[in-house]
Image (cartoon, rainbow, N blue to C red; front, side, top):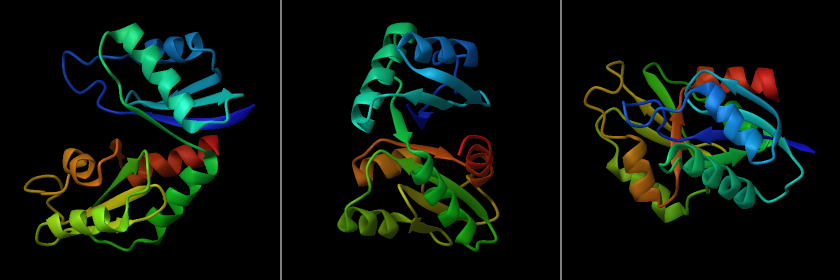
Length: 176
């Protein structure tokens, strides 16, 4: 059995996409995974599996979530080593403003990353670190920010879900 960390995209953000933690756990266990734990109510799930293929794990989780909720829940899965790599990159970045981490299903092609970097607004930066892009914005945070999860997905052509470095550090400390 190996440990994996799943990140669910866009749950509990509005009235129509509710997915309480206990229901997430039940759906993951119902899909045959064990050792299921959650952190916060934003779709951070630790699980154990004998599956080796990340794509198969993602597909199994997405099918279980669709069956349970009736709406798609894009999900990406990292190994503990991949999560540690993303966390190490976040820790190494020095930035005085806000730092958001867009976890990626796939590493971006260099030209796609360059295209995303070109879309950054004044005072914004995009840094690749592990299977994630680190979105660095000014002290005003998300207000007026050009960079965001939807833009990351559109430009990079992959599923992404955003967390802050504090959440990722907590997950590394608890689950890796």
